[in-house]
Image (cartoon, rainbow, N blue to C red; front, top):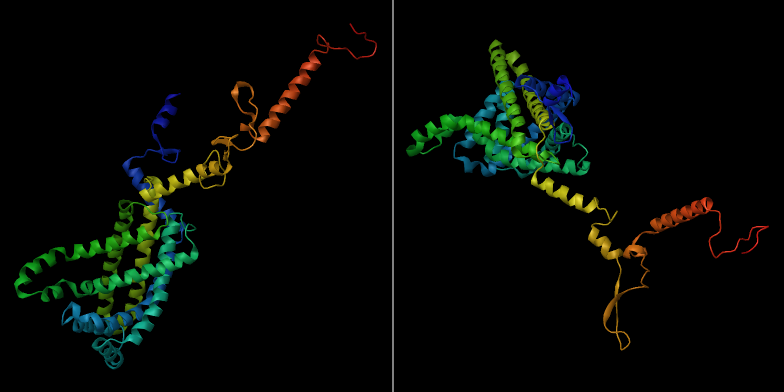
Length: 417
């Protein structure tokens, strides 16, 4: 091997798939991961998937808010006596930035008061039906995008994929009903809800850990989504990188949108009322973009540095290998089952002439040379051996035309000895 070939072979590593993997420096590795993620995201139409997810999120939000408000009429007291009033004031304040004062005072305000005063079962049920349809479509968009990023789009039945997205949306909805009020209240309002004896210590702890806890909650939700969406999942720690990227991108986009809203609303009421819906659409778009981008990053990491299969996947592979890859059977579940079905059957003959000794059914086949039973081979092998024997005999006869000793020559003109 020449020196250039040796240097090139030394710069390559064997990949788990059996090929060769190029050893890169740290900067080239980072550039490769970034470029590969961008190429995969563009090839999988990240903008189209993010736009579709944003549409379904926007469509599911109004009935979801109505359903949550109707549910808070039943469980609002669990979060404190002033929780309903705080939620009402925040909704009215936010609505004032989008709608006119007459719409807020005549329509939105009385509707919120009526729904928070007591639970409305009819509104809650109809709102959740519409929210389940639109929200499950948004989750289905996320699940399809994650599966396509990892090349597992066809691994799950399409009908079950849709049902799975619906169940996943219901699970996230139940968790959101208990966590979103704590996130919406903020650290200052949560501190005021604490008892007097705990207020000083609680305020210090909440100021220190509130925002890290919110970010950690976001990471747990994204990692769980990446984990559950894949039919052939990856270990938890291999999905954390995409969750970090998605969470960081989403928080950065949220900060940019907040600054944009603050600047636009300062210019006047008209521009603020127009900019708020646009900002909300951008908010949902960036959320979908972040989720898909994190999935593409996880797929790139898995492609560059393949992870070991999980224990469940290892067990599945072991069962499939021992059930299908069998030398003696083609089709049955196991080799043992095939031997039990096709093997010799033991019979038991009783009586004076036949003592109770198990024998094999049928006549015993003659033994060939070497002690091997001729019946051990298949019909195809016996036919091949017979054909080879006839061929060798014909060749021997053509080479030695003289008659053997003790035989008569029946050719014309010949005389017997």
